[in-house]
Each structure stands twice: as structure tokens, then as C-alpha cells.
Length: 42
Image 1: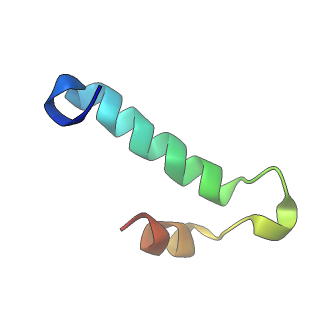
Image 2 (image 1 turned 90 degrees about the horizontal axis):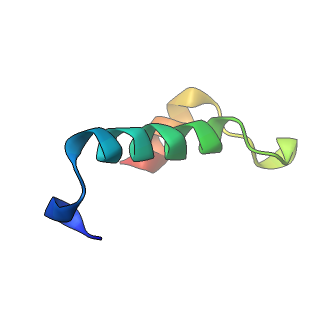
């Protein structure tokens, strides 16, 4: 599925999940602070 095939709620949850994964990485050395996570998400 791509673009318009994915509903808005699913897209929002996907972005939130990706951001959360950046800020709470399993490897602490790769964890980003929230501001850096926002910059990388853009």
C-alpha cells in the first residue's frame, strides 16, 4: 500500500512510531534526543 491507499490515522501512527523508535532505540548508543529525532524526521 502507498500514499492515498493508507488512511490518515495509520499514517499518523506510523510517523509517531518512527519518531519513538529514534528516541528510544534498543541500542542506547544510537538513541537520539527528541529534538534531534524531529530534525531527522523532516
